Length: 229
Image (cartoon, rainbow, N blue to C red):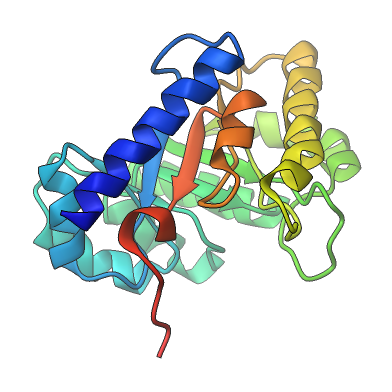
């Protein structure tokens, strides 16, 4: 019952954070980050009503997607290599959350066109300027915005970020504020509504909800500590 208990606690925490922020109840989507965890654990979450799951690596997603009920929805939340775009789109992944460059966006646009589909993506922003992190810089995204918007076969749904590690959840708030304000600036430029902000993980998701996250990516707080061995 551990996973079900954790899910219920997290949903209650999200609802409380929405209320504190004066947001519409239910306006935040919980994405269960299932990377490294077995299908048996994911099925426990499914039994408690969870339907949205996130994987970092395509190969792991390809193993899990066929093993789970077909009403599950899957996001790729880790870096995506251009040579794996076709397989990812063919696998039925519904959102690519970490599109971190114009070259990757262009490759997704081209391959989606060849497949006759529209690919749903988020643009990853390196809000803290960490050299080790992927993503557009905020200024770089502003500079490339018009070219990105012009790419066909893409539905740019919004932005995502992974803040620099902080000692407390509160320490991540400036990064979340930065991403929200950047999205507001891009909406004002048009023409996209950019409804999604994917930000917040197991240790700081409530702060992210307070700052406008529409998707929070929670893994270890649901499934327990990961074993990378």
